Length: 225
Image (cartoon, rainbow, N blue to C red):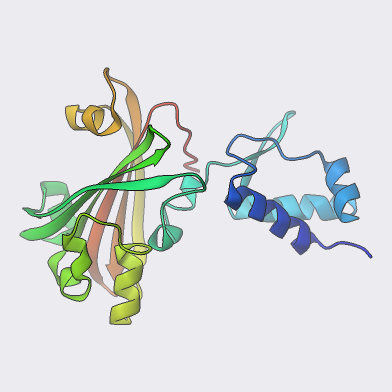
């Protein structure tokens, strides 16, 4: 019985989600996928195109198709449903009420907010140092944000479920900078490096309810296309 493009794409996505195909791994050659799924070469190309469109893989001319670092995906709407990949863990450092920093106040408004600090690790290696600044109105619905513990799966998802208000990512920016003292401490670095910094703004309706910043460890790839 002939295979389908959807079946091939689902199989490869499942392997990537489980971590058996890791970021940077090369996909099997077209001929192997044709044989495994009983597909034509054009059908395999369509399946690969689907994976590219969803950010699972990317091409390198003359070299093949490789698994993407899916942090491009979890920086957007999927971040609301969870920010880790297979084999990674979140370590919460603190949650405290603070005055919104200047750049946060530009989005969230001046005054008190909840600052949540965490790292994302694979084993002992810190992949990402993240912070969220959450509007105090969210704490009335999700009091867990005031505790230095994980919300399951994220505070955005819990707020959405309890309030009935959809949470969207209004904007995402990616920039680079030389590590600050705070970056070096959070990432466990002894020297200055260039790091990528991603900022996201979360809204419900026309109201900003949170902003986030992720600083990515040097040498850890991040797809920003």
